[in-house]
Length: 506
Image 1 (cartoon, helix red, strand yellow):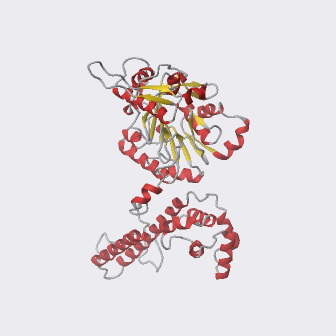
Image 2 (cartoon, helix red, strand yellow):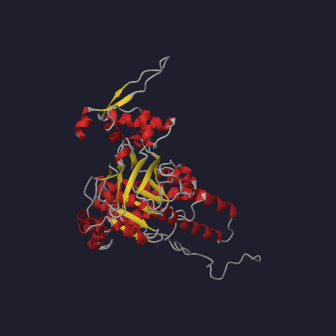
Image 3 (tube, rainbow, N blue to C red):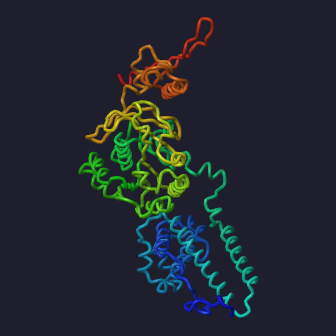
């Protein structure tokens, strides 16, 4: 043999049939979780079947149980462990899979059904890796045979890879088709018309399936505001800033930035009667994550699945990524965000502004470029709320810089730092202002008040006109059309409180 072609001493010259020089990839916990979820809810089988494909389970016992589940589903029969145990007994497979005790153990896996598709994807990926390992072993065996032809071996390898790729694409489980759906289903079944998590359809602060980012300098109360939304998601209050908040099943709070201070801030809102809810429906992660989200894009979805949470709060964003200024890492974080959102997890992110804007005058409207870090963080967020003011000042202003629907505010709000609550300044509420204006208001009048005096620009006036229009639509105001300009000048449309509005507050 020519010099340099000898195999290392630890490498055998030939492998017996089925032997492997590499450890076979598998994840038994993911397999158990998938089977347990299918026993709890038969519909889960329909969701995970196209993901798994054929021969996905590493343990033969798990593959046998999976085949039994498929048989039950085809007949539209129950898939609970009692019925499944009976079927396996009739087939003579019960003892081979570990007996009734093991079937019931699978059914009691503590993961629920919400993360079954994610677990099935893990099982599928391990199965694909095993097939690649087997192919690699066969290639190595062929290469060591006497008279081996490199061209023939290369052609066989290419044919195997091509067949594997075509198999994945044809089954619908491949990465190019798993999350694809027809246009009608996308429009009608994706959930685009769901109720907001916070706010109304006309003014949405937090839309379902889109992340909410709350931005501000240290000490302006963004954590105070976020905690109120969290407690409302837990059912401990109904509204925040006079806007309704939808309930959550369980919240996972990633307290990475000064967890002691976060606990102290939460304590202002916690009473003895809240113990049961907080123990069952709020999970808090203290300190750094096992890895940054830009390095492990699946980590956010995995955390939600592990803790059975449908809401995650990231406090704060800078602690979840390696650096805030690298565009490529920001895109990687956005992928992590979207993978969790795709799995039905709602996300709230607390973040900081650039230091240069920390001393901006109260009420001055900030812009998205004042958010610290790469622009891709805010580009991928569904809603961005920006809190301006001086650190520790109870009176701050909330700006809605990125809106799912209609813009909220700007709202002048007041924090009660003792109780951990926030209220809207009623002197800037368009409904209150109109009610207290006997001669009515024009859009320019309202805009002038909302910006704190001075000359409003066209955007301010248009925003005020939309505020007044919504009051008309809700029956709280009436509109008197204006007169077009001419030699004698024109007259702006004016809005007046309706009799219903005056009676309601009378």
